Image (cartoon, rainbow, N blue to C red):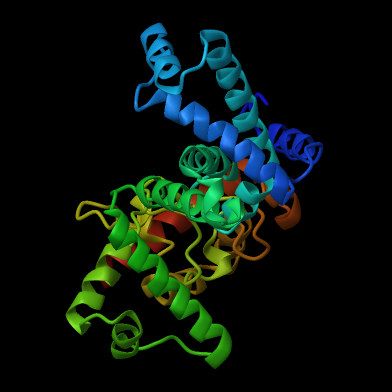
Length: 318
């Protein structure tokens, strides 16, 4: 089966394709596993099956080269059939690792690689079901991917595993007890020291993009520009910033409101309408002039004076 990765449409097509392949029965797993095992023995640690390897294997087993070729063909078909028959298992495990910073398609792809390793190492004569044996290999491959790719700073796999367990315990406690676990409780659950848990908490902190758009919920809605989200970089204070550039700072909102309320009635109305402070919708100079029965030039002139007055009051307060 050729797997092509791409958009979510490709994901839907892939999931639809997976449903066409029936699950393997126990007897099929054993028979296919034995065929793959013969192929693995033939490869004997080499990446490709060379003519020398075929000749050596034929002499060791006392069979002809044509029989060796049949073993290769059967082994490869058996491996492909075991992969297609266990794709549902890969998908079910991959879904458990969603929302960890890695796309589902990438999780499935890495799970398929883990599935291939499990098939190569599976011994059907030991009596274990392949799903039991393959689960660990698939899960390990996906867990390693999320540990290395879900963070800007890569963490060792064992550290990422402890952080994931710590987050899971905290979530379970929040759901069952309605509260988060304390540091000593986490240390007891994880069988670690309290300082070690503090280190894990520090490691678990994620990087934030300076350009990432965010909405500051502490700022009153009347000071939000329409359809404008402030990035983290915009929220970092500059020592040389203009006082009026700090309009959206919640700590100064009371001073700004006081400065606006001290404006003449007409200037205050113009400023509120032009900046959209009442309805989160900015009006043009023409529309504002029509509402106040003045010309658009007068609106711009009075707005500039109001702007200057508010700016001077803020400078005086600093």
